[in-house]
Image (cartoon, rainbow, N blue to C red; front, side):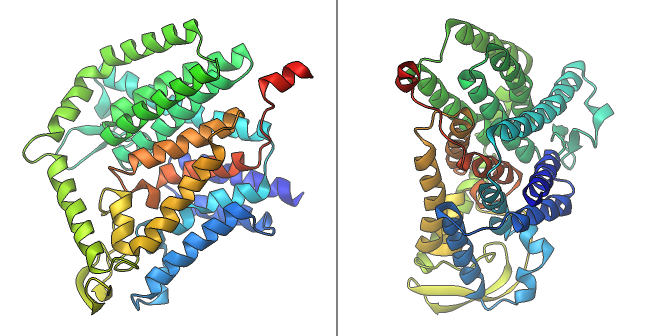
Length: 405
């Protein structure tokens, strides 16, 4: 009974991630699910606990108040690494059966696909303004941006790209033909959502991960002629509908005042500050703070011990350099190492849900070059949920063993 209640709470927490506009509901449900499912930790949980322990140490090295660490605003922004990994622990503890994991992922992807389809129809019909505040939000004085049900276009793009990748994986590796068709059809509006969002990092990471999926499909003899034809038609249709806006979005990247200029400056700044404290970094949350004062010996141990705390969405736009700046080699090694270890353990799986989790980890590594998504956010919460739910699923037997049986 306790496990059933925990799974229901976990499912509600995951479905609330369709919008992530009411974060307290996600926090409450997943925290309760983790509490009800608690058991002796295994390797995955131990590694997550080690990551949490280090980032807690990196925070307290700054001498900042424990009250800030406990505040909701801190965990909503600079401290997202703590809660964003909780779903992996919660679902690994609960070990839901494969059919429930599949149903949950199908429901989540279907909801995202419906939102993306509504946005696509509104965009093609030229009625974005009619849905302002619902799936389109205005960025200052600029045109309306597709944000799904989120508050930022990058959040919508990354979540729907992850869903698109997961749906494509299920379309390739599910055994039943009907299921493959349903999952395949879901990938089309999800892809449109990514294109509409204008999230370049999401689109590039998705394209690369899809390439890896194609390689896996060929190696496992799951890539049929029909699948190739349907995929080609979907890409051509998407390009015809949204190709111009995507081209303009990428062209804007290289303008003199384009996004690349600001991001390069952020990367340089993060690497410079990492060089001042290479082992432990400057302290968790200190990258965004103002009026910073440092203590220690530069290039050895140099931590921000006094500053005006600022909890906002600013970051280095690259998880790797951000981890180096705030956590040094220790924080970088533990956090990046966690996801590398997860991907390594999932890499040869034959269970479709575990393959989807593996490709999701690969997507995370790729998108983290342009955003700080390995440090938290809606997409990482979704991926952590998938990884935790798929972690303890039994692998499918090899084809030769099936034949022998």
